[in-house]
Image 1 (spheres, one colour):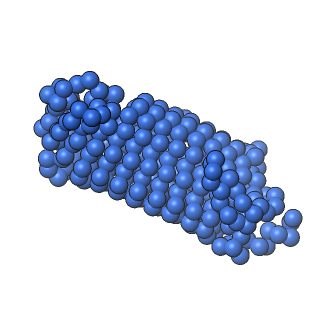
Image 2 (cartoon, one colour):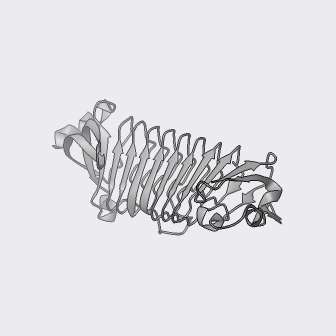
Image 3 (tube, one colour):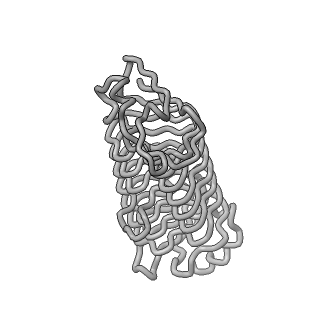
Length: 270
């Protein structure tokens, strides 16, 4: 196992794609320390910014202890192994991840799990905007894997999602599931406006308050329970809306009936 400790409080963005179990595997502590990273516009060695400790138990586990909210692209493209972060993490965590697991005991920046294809990201704090979403101008959203957030998330969670599961046990910002095609987004608490805008498929479950459903969705019925994933269901009852009809979509939005009595006006259409 490799353990990293920041040597100082970072003031500039750190680009650290090399913090990856596959990159570290088979290397000595000297070779790991010599890996190149960027601090602002200056290239440095990993050992100049982190204290590095190594034991021989498991070379596919990386533990980071300390605030690394300025450190970006940790675990980019990782396929196996595990990264455990005790503190806040920066933008692009687990970008294009294919396997393995990342656990964060803190908050994470924007684009966590962007365009991921497999593996698991578990965040025990809050996540910022664009969780699991692609960059602006790209339609290559999340295509597999699972993201679990125990706090709140920002805007455009799961945008352009094609496959996979995102579970949020807090609240979500606006445009959750924007242009999603497949997959599941579960929001245990409240959701911002425009949930499921332009979605053509997939499933979004809102267990808390939702101010309004877009007019391009139609009510289909009610349901007592909704499957989130194998072995986990959300207990309703829920209103079921289908859309986005502006995109000829057949996506499903389940909204808590108990937490949204203002949506009872739709019942006359059942």
